[in-house]
Amino acid sequence: MAKKDIDWANLGFGYLKTDKRYVSNFKDGAWDDGAMIADDQITISECACVLQYAQTIFEGLKAYTTEDGRVVCFRPDLNADRMIDSAKRLEMPPFPKERFLEAVAQTVKENMDYVPPFGSGATLYIRPYMFGSNAVIGVKPAEEYQFRVFTTPVGPYFKGGVKPITIRVCDFDRAAPHGTGHIKAGLNYAMSLHAIVDAHNQGYDENMYLDAATRTKVEETGGANFLFVTKDNKIVTPKSNSILPSITRRSLMTVAKDYLGLEVEEREVFFDEISDFVECGLCGTAAVISPVGCVNDHGREIKFVNGCDEMGPVITKLRETLTGIQMGHLEAPEGWIMEIKP
Image 1 (cartoon, helix red, strand yellow):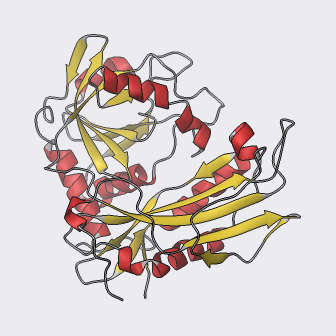
Image 2: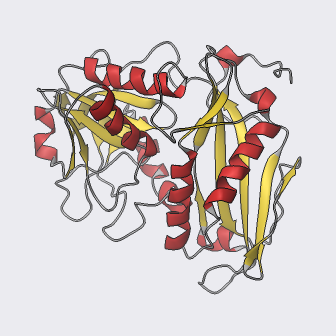
C-alpha cells in the first residue's frame, strides 16, 4: 500500500482524518462485535451522559515505522490495562484487554498508508476512547457506551531541536487525594485547561502541580510525570496515589536500570528538595522526555544545573535509549513491541 501524499517533515501535532476507525457499542449488558467504519462523525442524544456528566475516558499511544520497515506499537498492553482501571473508577464497562489490542492493531492496519516513514520524525498517533452514550438526566452512570479508536499522523514533538522548557509552580490543584488523578479521564483534563492557558499567558510552558493535601510534594504537570536526576546520577520519580501512571515513565525507569545501569527510586519528592537535583524531565507519549531547565516558584528561579540550557546528559541518554528501542535500533524487553503486519 502506497503512503499518502503528506508532507511528513512539516506535520504538526494536530488532527488529520484518516480512512477508517474502530467502533464497538455496549448495550443490554454486553459489547457488540465491533466494526471498522469510514464515518468520523458521532451522533448522540443531547442528553448523553458524556455531555451532561463527563463520563469519558481515553488513552494515547503511537505506531512507528522501524528502520527495517516494520510497523510497531509500543507496550499497548499497558494502555489496555490502564483503560480498564479508568473504566472501573468511572463505573463504565471495561473493554476487554485482548479486544483492545485487536482494535488498535486493526485500526492501524486499515490506516497503514498514514503511518509516517522511518526517519521523518513523524508517527501515527492512536486514540482509543470510551463514553457514556445514552440519555441520562439524573446523576448516575450511563447504561450504554461506545468504544472507539481513531488514528492521526502527527509530526515530531520538538521542531528545530530539543530545548529545555520553563515551568511554574501552580496555585491550582490538579487532583485530590482519593480522587481521579490516577486515571485517564476527560474530566481531569478539562479542569486543567484554565491552569495551562494561564501559565502560557504568563510566559511558562507548563505547570508543576503540588499535592492538594499539603502542597509540599511534587506530583505531575497534568499531562506528564516528572523524572529527576541526582548529582550521582540516580533517577528519582514522584510517588503518589493521585498521579497518572505514565507508561513512558515506567519504561524509562526500566531503561535506566537495565540498559544504563543507573539506580532508580520511586518515592515522595518534596518540593523543597528539587533544587538538589541536577536534571529534570517530563515523561509522556508525545515527546518521550521534555527537558525542564527551570522551575519558577512565584518569582524564585530553580535551575537544573546540568540541563538548564541544553538537555542534560542523563536525560539525553534515557531518551536516546528508549527511542532506540521503539525504532528497532536496540533489542526491546520481551512484550514491549507489538508488530502490525499489512
